[in-house]
Image 1 (cartoon, rainbow, N blue to C red):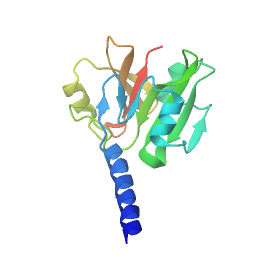
Image 2 (tube, one colour; image 1 turned 90 degrees about the vertical axis):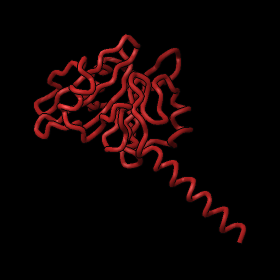
Image 3 (cartoon, one colour; image 1 turned 180 degrees about the horizontal axis):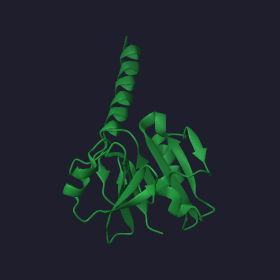
Amino acid sequence: MGRARTVTAIIVASCLVVAADATATVRLNKGIGRVNLGMTSSQLIRTFGKPLGIRTGGLSPVARRFSTDRTYVEYEYFSKNGYTVGLARRSGKMRVVLVAVYISGQRTPQGIGVGSLAGDVRVKYPSVHCGLLDEVSQSCVLPSRAKAETVFVVDTLRSRVSAVAVRART
């Protein structure tokens, strides 16, 4: 009977961790959910476990600025919690330089996240600068004096946010 309660408690705790990530907060210019810019790869793996995939080519659109960095890789946690995490060598260690989410749930303190209307981004963040990313997307960058920036990727056909990323400036 005691063993069954322990197993049940572990399962419930695991579900709460996943649920917490589903409603995680986008922290402008710092990170998303439990992922912070500057974390080491070891810290990331301790937080989320091993990635479902590792990508070295064909980078996500918000990561193109890192395309000349030969150490840059992306860890895919997409089906687990909707995260893509980019790492590059900084100070001798692989560190998080980008975290992006592609599922709804993660929101900025002002309520903007995947699925938000493009117009709402401009209303909540009047200083945002938008430009074409590719033929169907635009990148809306929130200016910052920090060494990082927050990017809202907008699907121009639906006029909705399709991804939110926090990335280091190069």
